[in-house]
Amino acid sequence: MAAIQPPAPRIAATLPHRAGVGLKPEHIDQIIAERPDLGFFEIHAENYMGEGGPPHRRLEAIRASYPLSLHGVGLSIGSPGPLDRDHLSRLAALNARYEPGLFSEHLAWSTHDAGYLNDLLPLPYTTETLATVVSHIHQVQEAMGRQMLLENPSTYVVFAQSTMAEVDFIAEIAERSGCGLLLDVSNVLVSATNHGFDPEGYLDGFPLRHVREIHLAGFAESSDDAGRPLLIDAHNSPVRDRVWDLYRLVIGRIGPTPTLVEWDNDVPEWPILHAEAHRAEATMVAAARGQGELRHAS
Image 1 (cartoon, rainbow, N blue to C red):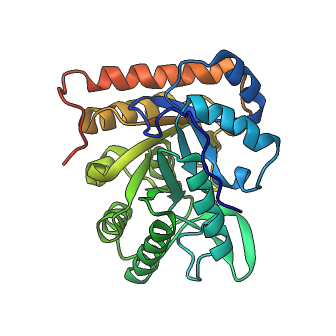
Image 2: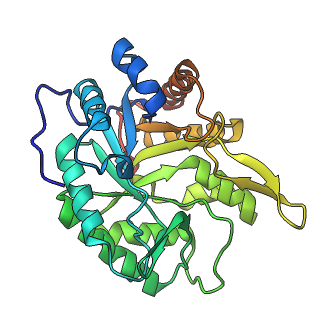
């Protein structure tokens, strides 16, 4: 993918301390025509790795009026094998082309040998895995010329080999690599429900000082073979009340932070998604009242 100089003029790249949503093809024409009041849009990097055509023309129109958050799903940061150099090059070119305010990836793996698995799979939390993830993040940040954010996972199984708690593992990654963190509050609730731990306790131990973006999403409810509650990170419904409660807790501690409402499946009409973003922004403002300055927790 050849490097392309960004067109001018554009709105500033920095994400405001507001709410945004994922940019969906079925909404783009309405957004371009109406220019709704919104903090930012998130795009999935892998959807824009072609060099041109209508998707890029429409995205250029969006970028002129809104800052972007670039979210990757295919780097396989946790894979024991090497990163895909071609994929990394395409990501770097996309960062240069659209100047996103933030760039993020997942704490997961999705490749094996030459194969790509269409899933974000969990990792064992060991010193060996830690070293691999930190090394990969260094490579990504060097290739991008910028900080990467790492998102906490939603999980359905855990490894017996793990020797570290997830929050400690993530904290060590941030300290050793210099990456920022994307805190997916919905993932916290999904994992807590599936594994039987306290989500508030998880957030008590989470390295909130490194958080630069927050995700909120809906989930699907099911049960496991033993009849216990099982949540699926489906991104197919409105944000649930329990997630809003945890979000208020986080904002009360770190202050207003760019917040994305994820709704990737069973995508609703634009006014419904826009209303979810407005709710997130109103919740953020209300939870941060009385804090004085807008700052990240130390």
